[in-house]
Amino acid sequence: MTLEVAPAHDFDDMATMFTPRKPESSVCWCLSWRLSSNENRALAGTARADKVHELCSRDLAPGVLAHLDGEVAGWAGIAPRSELHPFANSRNIPHLDDLPVWSLWCIRVRPGFRRQGVTPALIEGAVAYARASGAPCVESYPVDNGGQRVDLTMAYVGTRSMFERAGFIKAAETDSVAGGFPRILMRRMLD
Image 1 (cartoon, rainbow, N blue to C red):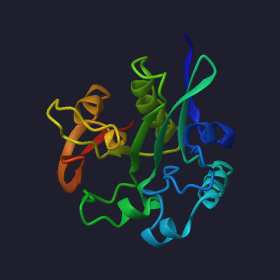
Image 2: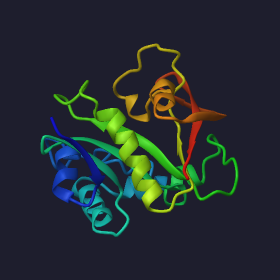
Image 3: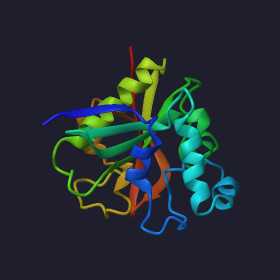
Image 4: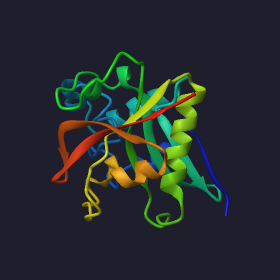
């Protein structure tokens, strides 16, 4: 079994992760935490895919993709917080200081690839990408669920324990909630 994580520059691989059964459907494409509310609402149907195609063609990838034995297995959204309108302007998630932190806001593993180590590999791959891009710190905003089950529709934010296992520490409370659980701000400083 070969598990590799790399920057998401291949739009076809992104499409494998996100294309809905009906291409004209307005699904997330992991843009909801990247764009302002107005921009997000304005992009409908295939325009969302077009926006991701544009993001994949930039020097700075929109995140990282995991491949298990050559097949697309998972995604992690990571970018400078300053590029992520909802986080950069959030009233619910605090800014602790002026560090140009990167935010790791979404982790998604495709059905059939779960429970094979993809999530920890995505977190480490995202952190490595941020470090290689000059980030001094990576933040995440997982739920503090105390071991309780998280509804799969809200599980993309991750859990406190999964980020603790990856070397993140709780840095602050937030006023944000996901799936009925409070979200916390966790950090991992990079050397």
